[in-house]
Length: 306
Ligand code: MG
Image 1 (cartoon, helix red, strand yellow):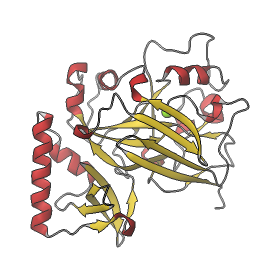
Image 2 (cartoon, helix red, strand yellow):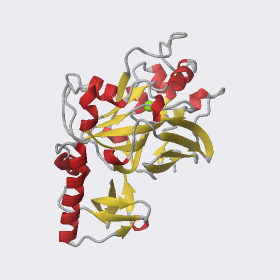
Image 3 (cartoon, helix red, strand yellow):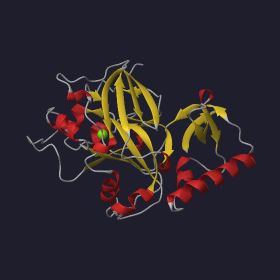
Image 4 (cartoon, helix red, strand yellow):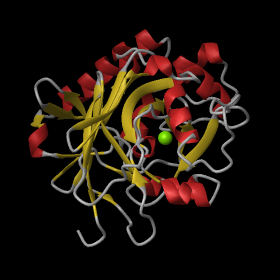
């Protein structure tokens, strides 16, 4: 199933998406996407969970008389428009990208021939960064001149847990979505810690919706990114250095993950700093990202006056 957050008549709704038909059916009885995820997250095993989700939500929507709406008649926003806490992110998680970043001159403290790390680099982006799948992204040209894109598969945590074992990790996943981990490369480099270069307002386009874990194989998804129609990134999640169970196990060590937590799993090669000279984004550029089975996001980058 696919669950979207969307605005209709100024109110935020959650709905079940029929992507092929271009329709969305509002889900009643939940206060938002995090509530929906939390309510259905602890039912297991997953195959039963999915059946119960469908049955419960269909009953609720049928009982309330909810009507299908055309996706074109609503404004789809990020599936989790305001995360409860920072988005967990992973750096250098595809081999080719790790090398292009290490060689770009934009990685503080980079060591020659040591592009692949022994442990995953974990950082975060604030909830302030999240915008919808078709919203504009601000270039913040007064403070950075090196805005870059990063197409990524994002994991949505369902069942809460701490010290989650790798073998149990997928049982804690509710579903998946797409994010663009937009980055100000100069700030990422100059401040050594990546946070300040990653967390500018609007720097995390997300969506278009959450696809539940039963619908996709997260270890075999094509990830593609275009800038103004030019294919820049083209990879598959099978090439992740640290796979999803490893990331969940690492991040949950000593820290409970909760429903609605988001983990961006890292970007493949082909970002702007992978080119010589680098290809940074400028006003009017459009970045589109597709991940097989998850949909497409497309965001225009705009100057401060736009
Ligand atoms: Mg990233």
